[in-house]
Length: 119
Image 1 (tube, rainbow, N blue to C red):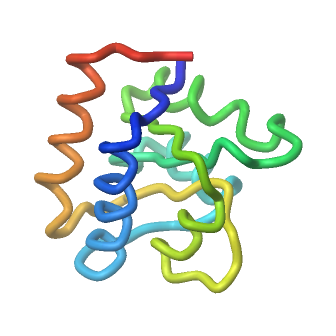
Image 2 (cartoon, rainbow, N blue to C red):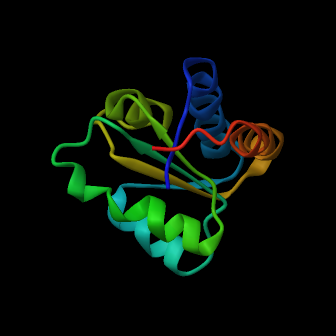
Protein backbone atom coordinates (compact mmCIF):
# COMPACT_ATOMS: atom_id res chain seq x y z
CA UNK A 1 0.00 0.00 0.00
CA UNK A 2 1.15 3.51 -0.71
CA UNK A 3 0.47 6.42 1.56
CA UNK A 4 -0.79 9.37 -0.44
CA UNK A 5 0.44 12.46 1.34
CA UNK A 6 -2.16 15.15 2.10
CA UNK A 7 -1.31 18.67 0.95
CA UNK A 8 0.12 19.80 4.30
CA UNK A 9 2.46 16.79 4.41
CA UNK A 10 3.74 17.10 0.84
CA UNK A 11 5.91 20.10 1.73
CA UNK A 12 7.46 18.14 4.62
CA UNK A 13 8.34 15.32 2.22
CA UNK A 14 10.06 17.74 -0.17
CA UNK A 15 11.83 19.37 2.78
CA UNK A 16 13.00 15.96 4.07
CA UNK A 17 14.44 15.13 0.65
CA UNK A 18 16.23 18.51 0.45
CA UNK A 19 17.65 18.23 3.98
CA UNK A 20 18.74 14.62 3.47
CA UNK A 21 20.40 15.63 0.19
CA UNK A 22 22.38 18.34 1.99
CA UNK A 23 23.25 16.47 5.20
CA UNK A 24 22.80 12.77 4.45
CA UNK A 25 22.55 10.62 1.34
CA UNK A 26 19.82 10.17 -1.24
CA UNK A 27 19.55 8.27 -4.49
CA UNK A 28 17.37 9.39 -7.36
CA UNK A 29 15.36 7.34 -9.81
CA UNK A 30 13.25 4.22 -9.75
CA UNK A 31 16.11 1.79 -10.40
CA UNK A 32 18.18 3.24 -7.56
CA UNK A 33 15.19 3.25 -5.22
CA UNK A 34 14.45 -0.39 -6.04
CA UNK A 35 18.08 -1.41 -5.46
CA UNK A 36 18.40 0.29 -2.09
CA UNK A 37 15.03 -0.94 -0.82
CA UNK A 38 15.94 -4.52 -1.81
CA UNK A 39 19.31 -4.24 -0.06
CA UNK A 40 17.56 -3.06 3.11
CA UNK A 41 19.42 0.28 3.08
CA UNK A 42 16.44 2.58 2.44
CA UNK A 43 15.14 4.73 5.30
CA UNK A 44 12.39 6.56 3.38
CA UNK A 45 10.97 6.54 -0.15
CA UNK A 46 9.05 9.22 -2.04
CA UNK A 47 7.38 8.41 -5.35
CA UNK A 48 5.62 10.77 -7.74
CA UNK A 49 1.98 10.17 -8.61
CA UNK A 50 2.26 11.70 -12.09
CA UNK A 51 4.72 9.11 -13.47
CA UNK A 52 3.57 7.85 -16.84
CA UNK A 53 3.07 4.95 -17.30
CA UNK A 54 2.34 4.23 -13.62
CA UNK A 55 3.81 0.73 -13.97
CA UNK A 56 7.28 2.30 -13.72
CA UNK A 57 6.91 2.90 -9.97
CA UNK A 58 4.06 0.50 -9.20
CA UNK A 59 6.34 -2.09 -7.53
CA UNK A 60 8.02 0.33 -5.12
CA UNK A 61 5.24 0.63 -2.49
CA UNK A 62 4.89 -3.16 -2.29
CA UNK A 63 8.63 -3.64 -1.97
CA UNK A 64 8.88 -0.85 0.63
CA UNK A 65 6.04 -2.35 2.67
CA UNK A 66 7.71 -5.76 2.56
CA UNK A 67 10.95 -4.24 3.88
CA UNK A 68 9.23 -1.96 6.41
CA UNK A 69 10.29 1.28 4.72
CA UNK A 70 7.94 4.30 4.83
CA UNK A 71 6.77 5.08 1.28
CA UNK A 72 4.92 8.28 0.44
CA UNK A 73 3.28 9.26 -2.82
CA UNK A 74 3.53 12.93 -3.72
CA UNK A 75 1.84 14.73 -6.63
CA UNK A 76 4.71 16.00 -8.80
CA UNK A 77 7.78 14.39 -10.34
CA UNK A 78 9.01 17.87 -11.30
CA UNK A 79 8.96 19.08 -7.69
CA UNK A 80 10.47 15.81 -6.48
CA UNK A 81 13.31 16.21 -8.96
CA UNK A 82 13.84 19.80 -7.86
CA UNK A 83 13.89 18.79 -4.18
CA UNK A 84 16.52 16.17 -5.05
CA UNK A 85 18.66 18.82 -6.75
CA UNK A 86 17.93 17.76 -10.32
CA UNK A 87 17.08 19.90 -13.34
CA UNK A 88 14.85 17.09 -14.61
CA UNK A 89 11.84 15.31 -13.09
CA UNK A 90 12.33 12.06 -11.18
CA UNK A 91 9.76 9.38 -10.41
CA UNK A 92 11.24 8.37 -7.09
CA UNK A 93 13.80 9.29 -4.47
CA UNK A 94 15.14 7.08 -1.70
CA UNK A 95 16.80 8.43 1.43
CA UNK A 96 19.58 6.10 2.60
CA UNK A 97 21.10 8.33 5.28
CA UNK A 98 18.75 10.80 6.90
CA UNK A 99 21.32 13.29 8.16
CA UNK A 100 19.45 16.20 9.75
CA UNK A 101 16.17 15.04 8.14
CA UNK A 102 15.77 12.29 10.75
CA UNK A 103 13.16 14.21 12.76
CA UNK A 104 11.21 15.21 9.63
CA UNK A 105 11.09 11.59 8.48
CA UNK A 106 9.93 10.53 11.94
CA UNK A 107 7.13 13.15 11.83
CA UNK A 108 6.03 11.96 8.37
CA UNK A 109 6.14 8.29 9.45
CA UNK A 110 4.16 9.02 12.63
CA UNK A 111 1.58 10.92 10.59
CA UNK A 112 1.32 8.01 8.16
CA UNK A 113 0.68 5.60 11.03
CA UNK A 114 -1.88 7.84 12.71
CA UNK A 115 -4.00 8.60 9.63
CA UNK A 116 -3.73 5.33 7.69
CA UNK A 117 -4.81 6.93 4.40
CA UNK A 118 -3.89 4.43 1.73
CA UNK A 119 -4.83 3.92 -1.89
